[in-house]
Image 1 (cartoon, rainbow, N blue to C red):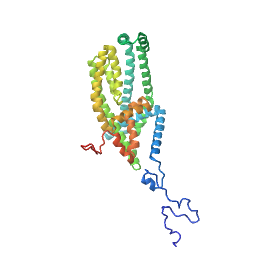
Image 2: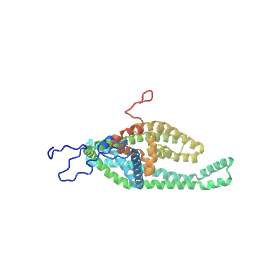
Image 3: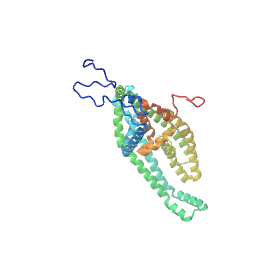
Length: 398
């Protein structure tokens, strides 16, 4: 019989019981087998993994809770993420200044000045565009009345009764449209009112970004995959902003030329609006089209409005629908469908800023849930426009 202290280990890999202690109630029980579909690693550890369907339901429920929480805190999350996006975009300027041996405080001050100037210019352009359109409409009262008379006459010829026409005219007049624009202006002003919070947060983010490379390097020793995912998110966000800016400048200049040719009032203002709305994927073109098309309708009638719509549509089809989505998709690794769904989802969760930040928010979600987890990397095949790691053969098979 073996001596004490040299007992052979149990089959289950458990440590021998201490002398004088009661045996473990589970020491003689067989290790239960893992449920079907469970990972072998979990089964080897004696864990009890949940069925896949339950995991999917729990994950979906968690996503709903997170989305509800983000929607409840949209007034903080939206401006905070906008400030983070600006800080990420402007960081290369700070790094470039530091490489040129500019003193740290001066490099931070210059970077902050550029960021503040860009943010305030965009906010002022939005407010100016909406306010200018609302004031211009008051001078087109006669043209609007004539246009309504023409439309009601045509509808009367199609069999619409006079009572129905009178009801529609009373509900839709220039004053009603002006009130709608005022509400839009109030909404824009609500976003602009967050500028104080954005500017203060941006101040601290830019200061902290001066030491972010050192801190990320230290964190990479413990969590290399997470740091790599966050670095990829920052790089993709900067690339997306650069691509959107370049295409926005191109689209706005072509729009201004078209508006000058069609003799639409305030072409440079609407070109600036088109540049800003270009950061909103998919529907930004429509938002930039509405003000000049409405003015063209009141200024030159239906023919001029149709020409503006056709010009904007051709420009959008060539640049924003055929070229830009391909470049953006290849740059950030998101398919066109996922980009559109991101726009709808983040607008619902965060509001107007969600439309502007839809792609960066989706990139951050991808970085945290997909790129940081090696077990989830296969999702890149589904969400990217083209999977770089695989090529299709001529028969359509992998």
